[in-house]
Image (cartoon, rainbow, N blue to C red; front, side, top):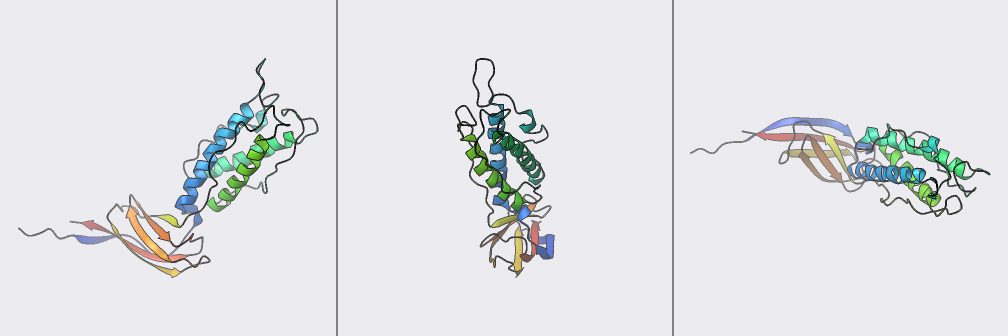
Length: 227
């Protein structure tokens, strides 16, 4: 019986693809974990208020500092940007009350823990920087026992977000076992070298020796196997 012959079929290719940190795999995953942890902990922190005879961390609910209902748990870059920008805006308001001479919601005036920047983030790299800053400043604020009844009750537990060495490039139709041939045309600011290119589930994961940043240029061709 004659053996079946498999012929490669080209399913995705580019003669000059510029890398982007917006599709950095580790960066997006770690930022989503941190943002969602901050969402949970900050929400619990603001909601920790005195009710009747039950003493809370704050004198009353800081309604203006509550996250918007549209700030859902992040699951992609779009929702991550929205959540990060809302965390920024609401934490700024919360910190302003904490450093007021006569705070409306906090127990007493305390030390400021202001963010390094408050403009809206629009990229994954900018989001990572902002989230790590929010984590540091929020945890310091949460730990303050002067502004709060006790302090340190709702600290973030997630690790800092960080960019990695792999990016995920869409290659519609690709699946596990397909083949990718690729080459680095310009190693970019990071002077990266190539490690591997693995197609699967509609995308190809390109791994470099380090973060390829936003200016490495590659050429690639993804082949699928058909009978």
